[in-house]
Length: 274
Image 1 (cartoon, rainbow, N blue to C red):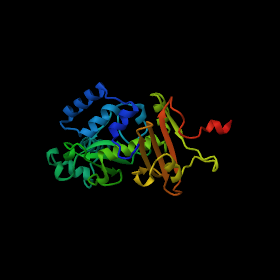
Image 2: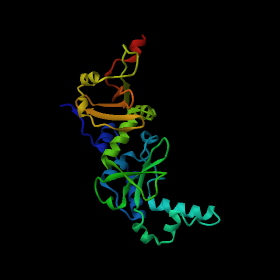
Image 3: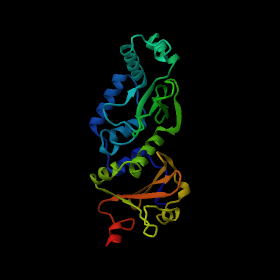
Image 4: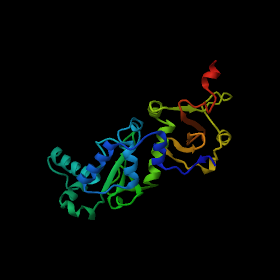
């Protein structure tokens, strides 16, 4: 079967042409030494290819040297800010109570996390990996809303590799941003969107997917800002299919990502204009 549904995020990047970068490997090794922590293999392999890439400018994964960081560092900064910006440190504040303890005792009150990203559009949610899980190859990813108590972290229900696939499918589907259009074009790929001339709209259907050899029930769907996203890969044609399902209308948008020199997968919209 040509269509692959169980994709590896690192393999996906490699197919697109994102190779390991020596500068990224050096930075990651320096980060681990500085923080005195290990990093999961899935994270290391992915970041060696994603580090500072334009493709990730508008997504939920931090890929620049500014981040990632440890949650305890963020807490310490908050404590310092409260000390500086208030005449008297609010004794009812959970930060005040934590500030009375040596850092060595903080794990009794709040867990530390490696912060790896946030929701790009709002910045209300932060994603992290539990420090105790960093030795695992593919640990769980957790999230925290800024209005939650700092001790409250929720399970995303995703492993790190699943979280990275969610990031990639949101990027490639161009649901909120068209960052992928130019980023892929610059490395020799073309992104085509399916257009239905009868409906005069950029909508597909399950029958359209079936025509491309895609079995809709086998697609694993991931959360997007207003619905879900999905992706699969035709290894015979070297074509990525990515799409979005609207939460309310259930309409499907579908795009094919092919090499720039390849024949069109869908009807060329310029042919309709002519």
